[in-house]
Image 1 (cartoon, rainbow, N blue to C red):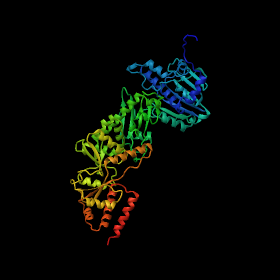
Image 2: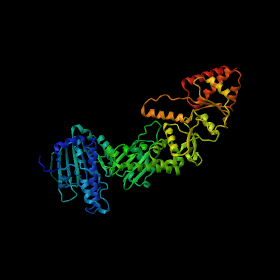
Image 3: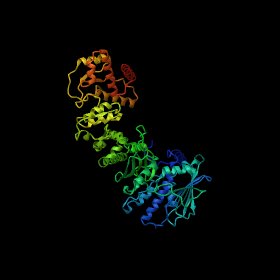
Image 4: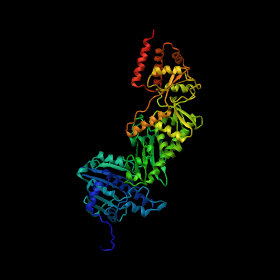
Length: 609
């Protein structure tokens, strides 16, 4: 072997690179129009920049971009009245792949007038122009530089990589890019399709874009297809609530008013803007997936970028303009990028700040939206410690009387104590009434996430306990300890048979309640945990014990009547009926239980004289 070290640059043959560009430069071929219009925007931005620096006089002309369709000639033209190109610039930026004219311009004019000089420059890459070959078999460039002494240039390139250049007698400054669309892609020549692509990718580009056909020409009263001053670039104080609502309806085709919105204008080091909306849900089973559109200097990049939004806020809808992210951003890039993590954290803070502001200053509004935002606040608190630290004092619970309470408000300005709850306010109405009669509020916790959130809160607060109203009896409902009446207990055991619940006798404060069914909080939570496990994994879980305890109220006239009956068979029937009614007040009855209750009821009615 020769020990001589050889060095050199890797060469690329155009006949090999162009098939790659044609097939795989972008995942969606329609992006070619975004790239060409972006280049046109850059050309106008550069022209404006030179005018602002005094390098060229201001000609006071209206800048614009035209997209012209000619179905007969099978051409699509993108033309601008921007800075244009000289022959040397065409040689440098077009004939050499991946050499970006934007970067060259930024480098030349950086630090002019106290800033970096690249604000508003979209393209940072050199492949954008070549996306034209994904849909065209031939591309022409007709361009004239802003330099008056420079002659126009006509460049013609084929999808095989060959090109020719020649002088062009072009009168006005600017660039025309003429695509000779291939037969397979002629759908892009249809007005509706082209407009759809422009509205998707270029709806908020900074220069006016006009679309028309050769046959119709550009009408005098023509309106641009884009909004050059999108809402997120404006100062919030200059935007009306109606404008926020209209923007939401137009962008997301959702005609329900969102619950609220936030506008973001993050400075260095984050440097991104946007508007995010918290949508109103039609019902609890509605698809909760939102949609956040990602832009780069007003150029559409991607739909529904989940990686930029905290997972517990994925239902958000909105737009984010992030010029620090590359125009050709990928999902894998977003997942591993520290800048994206900081954006996500900033969004989380802005949302919590907005909610806390509602809680402190517009409590009624906050309570009105709580049922919609509750699952997302709960999930956010469980997943994000910083979010929990900010939101903990603004977490509210809806009580059965429709009032809303924080932990401190429920516990009368304490964070220690017992909070009573129901998970089925309809079937547990008798329990609710017992607590209300004793002046105790009961909160509603009816979802699977509620059960997880209860466990989470008990871990966060020392000596805070959530107890369901039909768990082991609390002193709130009892008048004190009672001696167990073994004779009465035996009567009920004989009436109920096997399997028989644990039976206790106590004195309840409410004499109208003959008996209640209870089940320990620990057993119930374990059962809820198994339900969550089964829902997440799809795995079956072994059946859990559903035996409840039966508590007899010795102060109830009905219980005393059963105890005093000499006809023991009738006493047993009444005892069983009391048990069935207690079950009915506790939970929905199973099929056999309901059949038994109905049969007993009919039997008692038939005995009426």
